[in-house]
Image (cartoon, rainbow, N blue to C red; front, side):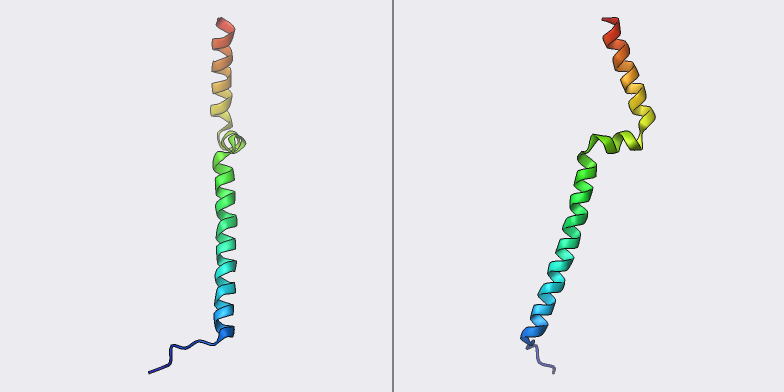
Length: 64
C-alpha cells in the first residue's frame, strides 16, 4: 500500500495551484457580477427595447 505522506514541496505546489485556481475563478466571478449590475451591459444587449422604453417614458412625461 502506498504511503499517504506527502513532501512539503508537493504540499506547497498544491497550495499554489489552488490559490491560482481560486484567483482565476474570483476574477471570472467579478467580471460576471460587474456585467450583471452594469446598466450599460443591458443597453448594449437590447438597444431597441431601451430605445422603446425611453420613447414611451418621454411620451408619458411630455403628455403631462
